[in-house]
Image (cartoon, rainbow, N blue to C red):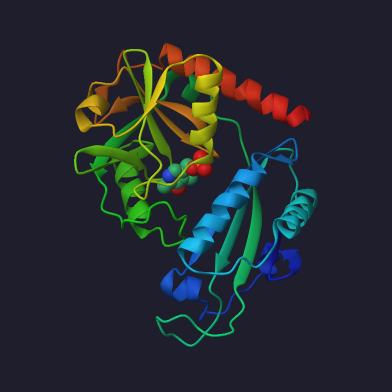
Length: 282
Ligand code: PMP
């Protein structure tokens, strides 16, 4: 496995970061995850735009222009195996004496790696996944894709401990998102999605799903989703770059709707797969 670190491509085993890296010391950095299908990065412009938003959010200069990122990403994909991959991009505020305040004239640490992107198991498509709910105890800048993921780690482990695949977070009685995904609700034939504000990550897959809904005449509404609506949903979906669209068929141990992936999910899953295929042919 070949990774990228600060200007060089090298084997993963040889990639080293000093312990005083602010990513290690403070979690002071941001990241991106970009799916790659048939060696084509998916929605690359949108991912690079969100990376810029995250960097702006932590006041860190972008180390590369979009043209440079595109070239690095092209090489990263070429140097790694697998038609389908996902790329992890990670930028920290660099290596400096431990002090909370920003260091001066310190180059950022830039890291990139590729992992195999495996299709969802058929059982998952047929039966969906279980999820639990938990209070959203994160900070108020969840729109920044920050590498400091301790709350998300703890929240996801709650799900694993309960034999579930994801934790769906509620803040002040409203749905925010999953520990590592966005959440949609279907109620009376309408697709409901929380708004892209500071309380959730603006998912790239989230945007694709809303675009596909509009393109195929599925009514949708973006706005606060109350806990009651979540709990009485006909369908619940999670979306993320690596998991695409998945049906949540059990929530806190109770069946969601009929307890199996619903009709709108079946449609959206097909639309999503078809959309991927058209992108790959371009
Ligand atoms: N919310 C959180 C907290 C996430 O970590 C992720 C991505 N893993 C998402 C939402 C989904 O975003 P995307 O569709 O861009 O992968």
